[in-house]
Image (cartoon, rainbow, N blue to C red; front, side, top):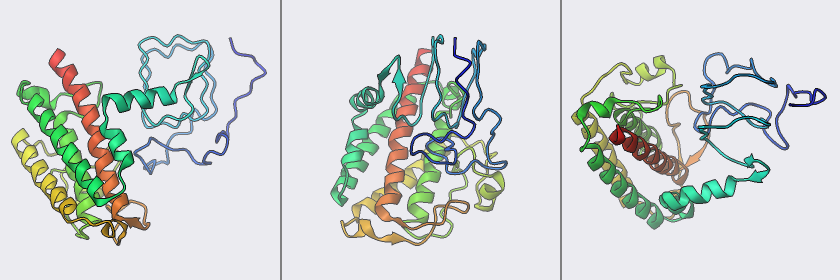
Length: 278
């Protein structure tokens, strides 16, 4: 039971937090409509929320009190996450680092040699993942687990990430976008079409692997020629039309590629395990 004297704060921004909502750690724009504010400051008392899903939502300052959290799944950017009075943020991050040491390797990276070593790690991890995927029925590679992207969609997304954050920014190519690339789900379809990307395409797995291998070779060429001074060079182009127009260094752009690679690898092996168990 919650006290009736606890009013919801309809303008909650958190102590020192942003005044605008943050719609997911990988989304910089709420898209058309600006995101829903229907439940801003809402209260749910004795409410049946079984099976509810919250995707790309800002839950800053949310309190869940005296509730049943059974088979409860939570993922996203964590800071000051308290469960039954215990801040579990550091524990969760440490456990993720234990399972995926490439996360810690990425955070330690500072030099061109660090970037090269990180890319070596990424190539090795994805080679293992693709080998695991090859042991599954072909149809499984199109299957989504818990409404997440399929393996083929994930690989297509990483093609787009390489094009946007390496080909266009670091290499200064105006239109490096592969037609099979897959932008973030919120990226406007009209903008994707203007880049020559066909969001309705249903390519075969061999086509996807070929596009992915080509873009990984682009990254390999970039990291092979990196210097410490070159990491500080400022890139002149935004990753794609619609992205914020701001100055970005080479290291900042490559860091996006590297983080996307390791995070989507983590999701992919999680889902491959689920598909294998089926």
